[in-house]
Image 1 (cartoon, rainbow, N blue to C red):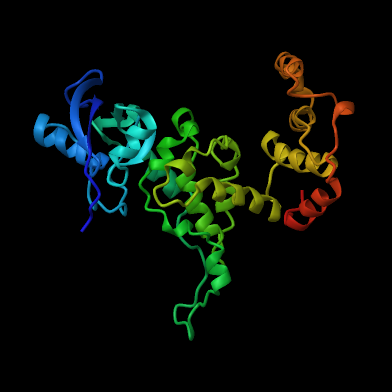
Image 2: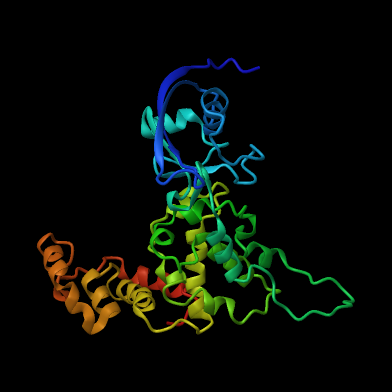
Length: 325
């Protein structure tokens, strides 16, 4: 029996409200409650519905962090309501909390959103094995432990959409597949049983693919299963080089230029990296470059100080690189 004392504190909630069938614009309602240290965010959603407004709508199901149905945003942070304790939320944001759906522009009713785009993107990356198989096999298609480990737990995704709607690129680019779709693409691309020759090409297309990821790590922060989609995106980058399908564009040149800079100096030459990536079009960055130069953010090529451990760094780059640039 727990002897830990239950504490209470007053928290002010600003809650997003919208009914697509009745409201022209969304609005917010304020609620003030005494919150206990035992409660999670889902308890607050329940209390708003049960004690204040029975029309308040949200999704919920397992209450064990398995299904992802109750994913919402608290103060702009993607949150699985059944797992996040109110104490942690108050410690992180203070006593004034804003509760919103995962995507305001996709809201249907209060916390419920239309996830049609999420499932379309998921389907577009072919989230299934493609392979020629014997209809009457004489033995199992065995997968070694090492090959199974190569999936890197991407198969544990619960497809809750939290990472998808936490992604700033998804918010502004309707073509971008999003981190969940990339995690699914990696899961099947890394499977030794898969023979697809188009999935990796699809997720490498500019505008929709992995090269438009801005590396903000919001998806990794949002994932309730700690799958870390950004890691899968990086591995899809590497696969593109390994399989020789990486196209010559600004994004791939940026990746190559980064490695070349580290191999040459042991430190990153940011000015040289932009020049390598952009080529002649670097002239459009001159005003920003001058400001960066004045702040010491970039230095001229002759001003780069090589790392004292350059030999060791070069050995590390050589031993860890599996892709031919």
